Amino acid sequence: MDTDTSTEVPHKATAGVGLFYGDALRAYAFGHGHPFGPDRLDAFWSEVTARKLQDRVRLFEPETAERAEIERFHTHEYVDWVIQRSKAGDGFLDYGDTPAYPGIYQAASTVVGTTLAACRAIMSGECRRAFIPIAGLHHGRRDAAAGFCALNDCGVAIETLKQSYGLSRVGYVDIDAHHGDGVYYGFETDSALIYADLHEDGRFLYPGTGAEHERGSGEAVGTKLNIPMPPDAGDRQFFEAWDHAEAFIASGRPQFLLFQCGADSVSGDPITHLRYSTAAHAHAATRLCALADSCCQGRLLAMGGGGYNRRNLALAWCAVLEAMIAATPVSR
Image 1 (tube, rainbow, N blue to C red):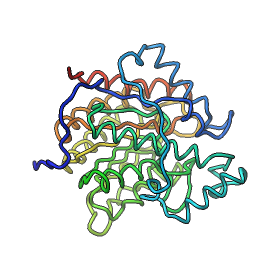
Image 2 (image 1 turned 45 degrees about the vertical axis):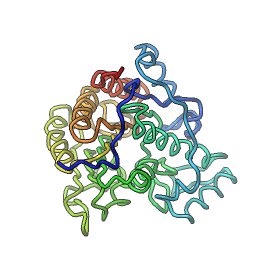
Image 3 (image 1 turned 60 degrees about the horizontal axis):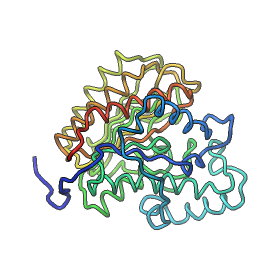
């Protein structure tokens, strides 16, 4: 395995795992009663404090991205459109899934900025890994909104890791019930992104993409892995598929790992049909920590993604956070 000395980070004292949390993240939501409502963050934080996990991590505040950072992934014309709809405060950013509201551009920019801040904290050695609950907006396209995602923080992070940090291989793993189409198609021809996505079969769930034969195109053929899961698939099917996904990502020798750990794949979600337990999320996080330690200096950023049963998301996201803490010794 080759070593990229340009991306080496000096060892220093660190809290191990960083948790990005603050009221500014609550602003990215579509109102009380909506599946993607502001109470999602509250449900997560209540479980964090019940388990006293806040005492075992380093807390970071949200940050807001600059337009130039956002346009590393999104087109200038599309950003203009989001700003316009954000000022108007009504209508939709797409064909009906993603409502516009006053300030949605600023709220989405905070999700992007917080994801970039987490990348920076990891790359600088302030923390070894990090978790962001309201992040992982994987449906946003370079030139359009989709599926509750006004901007795509995952896509901006990938471009930033390549352009600003000089990384040539970024790993992306997605276990959200929905296919991460904004990431897949945004980097379909880019061999720098090693992509593995386990999701409910698109014949039964939005966005209808992510078939097994979609493995990248052009020079990137073979750098992408889509694993459609049948409705009602549970832990047994997940663990079988996970081994394949993990081996695939490991074979790409990534220098940084992004983990979209959507909780809508847990049994009981109101808009999906998978039946995992939170053991799936804990296992994925544990294994990705081990992989990160073996190939990319421990660099792992987990993003909450979807999840519309509030209890499920609290348990699944905390399972990920606990697994990361357990797998991350604190340097002194």
